Image 1 (cartoon, rainbow, N blue to C red):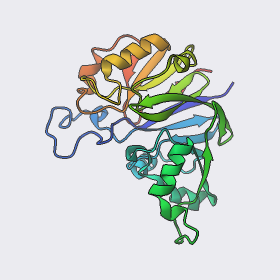
Image 2: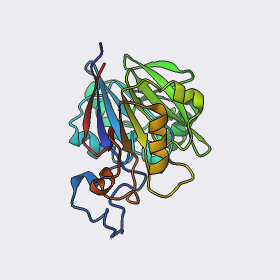
Image 3: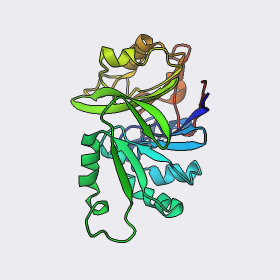
Length: 258
């Protein structure tokens, strides 16, 4: 049975928390759980390390988690809060002396090539990140020697990939999940899901919608991520959550039963 763990490197939405220039109670909070870097996670499976998303806080996240190698990178979609730190992977290129394997949808990989065109140029500047791109075109795929399953969700009109490995599923930036995909998530032990704020949003689950989705999927436990300052402080929101549901926070590490 594989040993699986997940560490939240970041649990914030696109602006992070605190938000620049904001003086709300959440942004002024002294609770470390209310300081949220952009959403990202580190998946460890039998000694292998897979990064889920590489946002603009990646350097800080990898230093804090003392990451010295990655076997692969999984990208959920191409928004900058999920790919903006790709250049920082070059430090691991140097250390591991090999290109980094990056897995995502063809659409996201195409956007990556446009956004970081210098890394894919025919005549590349010395020292740019070295990336091997692997399109995910079906449900089952392998990354870094680890077998995973892709879960399709929608972020308004944008397709986004979630990922499942055994009893763990990680889904962010979802607004709708088709019934077929929900059926593929039932029976999991741990669900990670986005919950942006209290009010409805056009492209993200709010807290009410996230809780309803947890009820439909019925995992043994659930953690929310991709959280904005508009959700409330960690301590306040935690009091409102049902048993088995918690807010994630930066640095939280989970062991996933086999």
